[in-house]
Image 1 (spheres, rainbow, N blue to C red):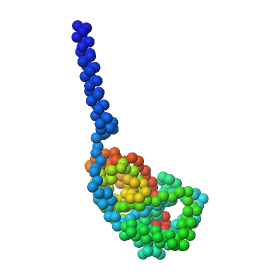
Image 2: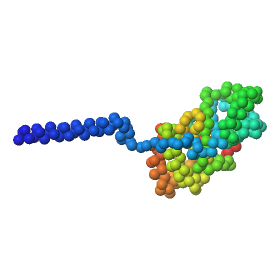
Image 3: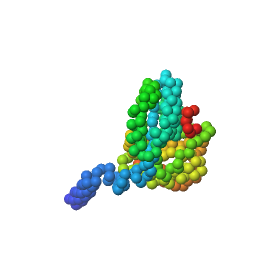
Image 4: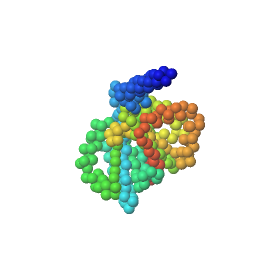
Length: 274
């Protein structure tokens, strides 16, 4: 009797050992995490910029972190810069689509959105023109003296987002930044092409959606416009309550994100959008 029990115990342990070895081999072959999450990254036959956007329009998003004691000087220098760019609009092939101050998020931070026509060929012309301009050099010197740091990105607009419409009245803007896992931009675009129709159908709050070309790669920027913080709350709650597919879209896009941030901004008096 004791011998039979011993044989059954040995057989059980051997069976467990075989199953553990088999699992271990699979993990070694596919990688530990791929054995748990067997999600495949879509193979790309071309750059995602060809699939998701019109490359003739280049957007530049610049962020300035200003010294607290230099705010007035910075605003004056920024107004001079916009005046210079407007006076040379035909040469620079572009215009400003918003000048904002962050009120919730990084303090003493300003965000500026520019759009240039003609793709990178005209961007090259802009670089050469600005490098030779003494007026621009003087304005930039004034701006730089006010800054703690600065950052810029070249971006493309998602084709499924509506064209930018300048706003009037008094509004707030939310800048949402998504840092995606490499290789997931097309998948993100497929889901958000559906999502943008839901979010923009009633409230018309979508301002611009872009993805990075140069700077922080696999970085997405969504800018939303609301009449107030309360209107933002109502708009966000409405889509959860009235759009049955919204939960599914969120569930599928969240795993694509490595990091996300949100900032609330207000337009400056000199901003083209209000």
